[in-house]
Image 1 (cartoon, rainbow, N blue to C red):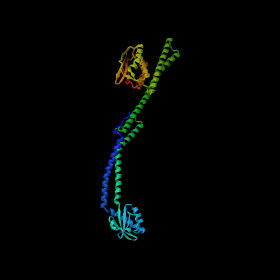
Image 2: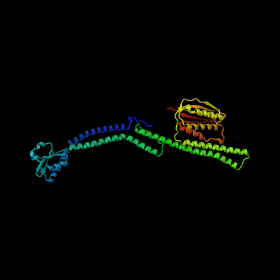
Image 3: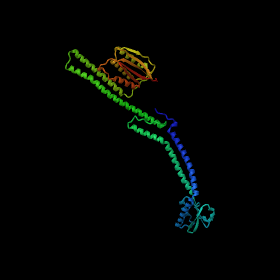
Image 4: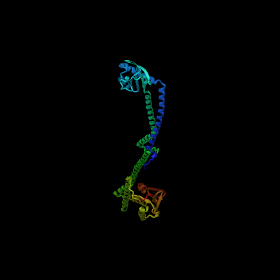
Length: 440
């Protein structure tokens, strides 16, 4: 039976909760790192000579570029090409306190004609650059803090993502461990160890899967055991039947040899030999019939059950006929049989065979001078009946193989019923119980 998973215990809900919690942790971590990073960048940027060193580096690069290409302060295009390669600075060049070049306005090639004085751009750091047309003053403004903030943001995002990923992994680690454990246990079952119990843990879909696997293991184990028991029972039965068939067959061969050699006193003794052969032949036929019936019953995997019917309706005629037949054979029957108002579902063919076996067993082994007690039974949701009789003294030749009783047990098991056999000193009792069912 499939176990229904409570929505609150579902893996999907747990995973959603885990993702939300991990996202919150990652967000908090990013916020704290961003505040810390911004403070660290601001402190570093204001308390170090980082800006001055970067500016000097760009000034040296610009001076080398000017000397290499013999630039004048009016070579705007070439200066713009150099600026575009640097990407993070703004450059203004002044000569004689007049603006000659401004990287913020690269399209103005003759900006010096506007006679913009240098004091307009006094926010930058000034450095002297030697051009082909003379010495000029370069004012450099670098977006160095932006670069540092960018690096810090990238590090913060990476670390926050690692926090998110780590939280998710830590959250699902237990589930993944359980999945790996189930995989290992399935491997154990595949190796043939059906007694190894599947670990059942939690209340989610994996628990349902584990429960299903364990139920399947139990079912398959019981099936294997049943097959092994059936094989062993059949092997034992064949051995016993072979022995039981050999005994009358040996007697038949002996009497046939005596008849063939005419080793008998008179016709009366010859007739006795013939009667013995007939008796042993009938015994062998009975053994063969029992073996055939046993083989037929054990080969049937499923049995078709009839619709539920009243216990009295199902068994009244059979019990009446059985008791009448036993009385005709000289047995005295005592009946204590209140009909319980219950319904049972049976297989009529099996019921007929069961009564034939019980009747045959009573005729063969019951003491005729003692009464056979027949009474109804009702216990723990089962209804049925029992036969109790005295056992007559048996000779060695009359010993039973019990194959008839084994057939009765097998048929009762097929019908989900019970067959209880009790032997006390010289008494024998067989009780048949059928599960009570509800009529549709």
